[in-house]
Length: 105
Image (cartoon, rainbow, N blue to C red; front, side, top):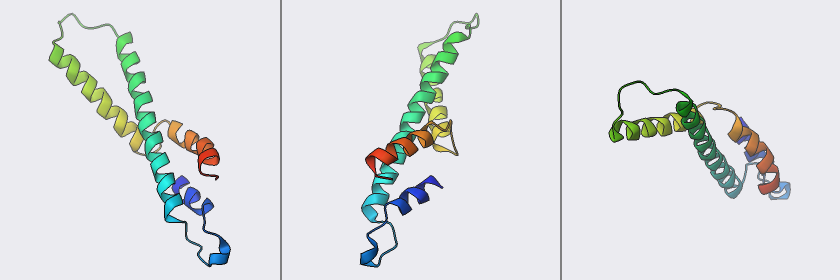
């Protein structure tokens, strides 16, 4: 929904007779949305890491491999959360704010 709104705010001048969004404006909006979702994924990863540190470890010792696996799992879960659906909403909020300043929306 926001992508469509972004694209229509960056319409070509009406005198050109073209009511479709310019390719450059659409490309910039898509790049901004992708970058903000990646930022949200980093933020979610930091949250997961902090939450995991707050839980006491079980009595069994953990190998370096299991720690690496846990980090990789957290990174992938963060990416999926941020890139599917609404995520936490951080990317959408930042897009509304930054879109006004960077894209003139």
